[in-house]
Length: 134
Image (cartoon, rainbow, N blue to C red; front, side, top):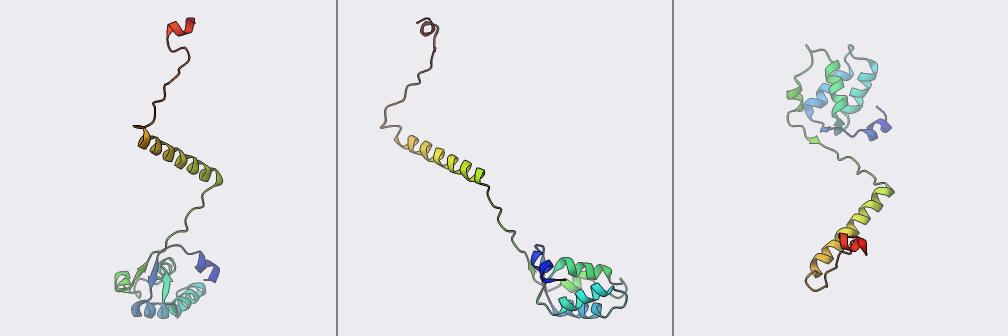
């Protein structure tokens, strides 16, 4: 588990408790686990917060006869939810939002002053048959 992989982790983070730490220390010495998983367990045991994804992978890889129940391990642990980074708005979207905000502001202003400003007459070309004839 490298620092790059840890910094990219956007999932659930759990607080390390004594029961989790004990499980991770036993998993780091478990001959039934791959060396990679043993190394991950050793690394996670020393951390105060750990990614649930890695913890779950270790728990599933452990033999069911020797591993403690997941609910017992997670009892008393804190769940830390990380927020995703806000999405960047494209220039086109920014321009569209600005245009819509301006239109909303103009409409709000027109609504405020509609009682004191003269009404606009709608000049529709050829609005009647008589107008069409000239």
